[in-house]
Image 1 (cartoon, one colour):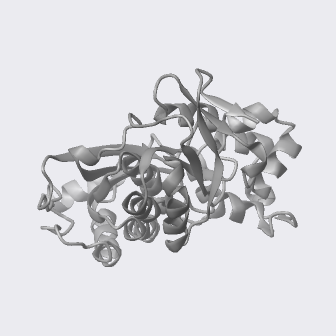
Image 2 (cartoon, one colour):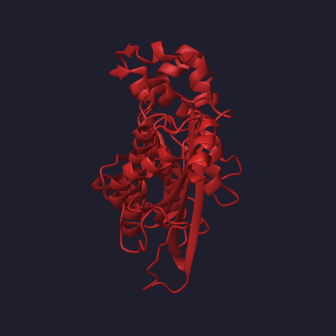
Length: 345
C-alpha cells in the first residue's frame, strides 16, 4: 500500500524520494552554520534554538522575512544556483541588524516545479554560506514541489530570520540630531532589488547574459548574479566602536524610499552625490535603458548598500570598524533639519 501511494504521488508530479535525497545532500552545508544555541539538526518538525540572554536586561527578539524577487530567474537562465541563497539570507539579516540586533537563526523556503536534489542542495549551499557570513544558524526550512503550478526548471526562494537585541540598545533614530554624519557602506552590485527593470533594460535571455562588457570586467550575467553583500559583522562592529543612531538597508525603493525610513521626523539626509561610488553596472543600465537619474536613485542602491547616521565625533571610528571587517565605508553627507527626506547636493 505504501509503495502504491508513493508511485501514485510521483505520477502526480511529486517525487518523495527526491525530497529525502535533497535533505541528505544539504546536511553537510547546514552543519557549517552551527553556532552555540543550536539544539537540533534539520529534519524535525521544528527548528530548536536556545538564545543566550545573559548580560541583557530586557531581551527583544527581532524578525525579518524576504525573498530575492525576479533575480531568481537569472539563476535559472544561467543554471547557476549556489549564490542565490546568499541573497535570500542577506535580504533578511541586513534588515534585522538595522535596529542593532544580532541575527540568531534562519529558515528558508524553496518552492520548485521539480525537485532535483543536486539543484536544491546547491541552493541551500548558498543559504548556508550566507548564514556563515552573518554568524547565524540555519536550523530548518521547507522544499515544496509544485508540479503544474511552476515549470519544472522554475523555483523561488524566501527566508525568515530572528535576531536578538537588548531593549536599551535598540537603534531607532530617536537620538538623531542636526550635524550627525551619514556613513555609507559599499554595495557589491545590484543586490536583489529592481530586477524587473534590469530584465527589461537588457531584455535578459541566456545569450545576452553571456555578453562580456569591458566596463564591467565580466559578463553581464556574472555581474548581475553577484550576491548581495551581508553587512551584519560590519554593522555590529560599528555599533560597538561608535555612536550609531540609525541604520538603513538600501533595498527596493533605493535612496528615496529607504533612507527616510531611518530618519526622525523633521530631519533629512543631505547627501553629496559626488561621494557616492556609483558602480559600473548602474552607469551601464542608465545608459542602455535611458533611465532618468531620479528613477535610478529611486530603484537601485547605486553602490551604497547600507547607510548609517553616526555622531560627528565617532564617524571615523565607525568607518575604521567597518573597514576592519572587509567592507568599504565613506562619508556621504550629514543630517539636517528639513522635511524633504533626501536632499542631493
